[in-house]
Amino acid sequence: MSQQPPDRSTASPPARPDASMSLLTNVMDHSLDDGYAEASARREADGSAGMPRTLKSRLGLAACLVLAALVVTLGAAQARVSAPVLAKERQELIDRIDGETAAADTLESQVDKLRDDVGRRQRKALEKHGGDQGELVALLAGATAVEGPGVKLVVDDAKDTDQGGGGPRETSGFADTGRVRDRDLQRVVNGLWQSGAEAIAINGQRLTALSAIRAAGDAILVDNRPLVPPYTLLAVGNGKQLSTAFQDSADGQYLQALKDTFDIRTSMSVQEKVNLPVAPSLIVRTAEPYKAADTGSGAADTGKGTS
Image (cartoon, rainbow, N blue to C red; front, side, top):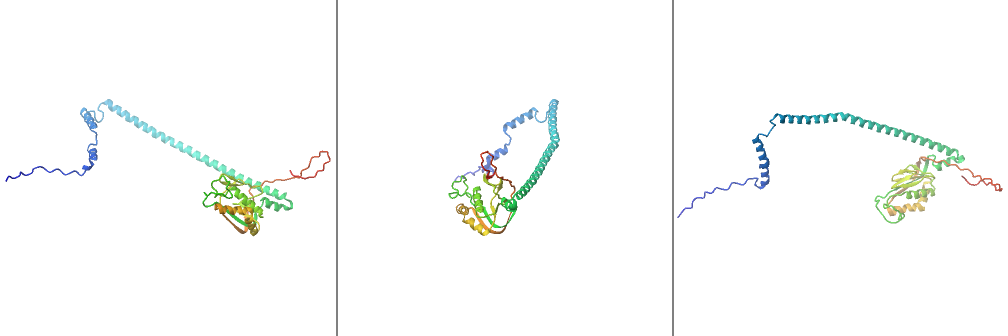
């Protein structure tokens, strides 16, 4: 029986660990493109690789290096020279701003002093021309500070100011009906006057017969001074009677409707003692009897009327 010759075929070599990354392996093994390699080999064969060999080429390279160094040096020197100038100009600008700010503060202080002086003179003039009722006139005009029993009414915006709907302000052009508006404070103030309040202040701003409550955008102005919620109204008078009369009035019911419909927050309490400041500015006006001109027709001068 014939014997099979032994198998002499060599075993296949083991697979490389990085066989699955053939693309990365090829890039690493051939980092330089073949064309670049051939060009480099030609330059080495021609003797043109490396530093210039002729004197002219070396001088040209040296001139280029000197020029580059000169440009860098000039740039650094220019930056070093201009830096103190810029710093000086900046400091001069800062000093100028500080000086103008101090001047503005001084002028503002002078304006406040003059305003206080004018207010004192107006109050004295009001007391002088008030006759026997000078104190009462000064009280009603806001020329003197007030202290006594009264009520405290706080009106604030709703927590959710994106509500809508009808009610007391259904004709409003404002989309945010949960905000307290100038006309709301107007009605509240008028209701307090009608209910027997002798003096009223909103957020420390004393009201007089000439006070104006207006709106400027979303802000409420009292005598051109902006107020922010919550709006605290202090009214001097018989606390219990004033509170009851206001809540029973049409304006008190209006405020209650705002609370029920738009969740505007309100609270009213009787106070044993409230303090109201003087009005920030007063306008003193006088009136004299009007004398009719003598027309020669024998008409009697009644002396009625004011100017």
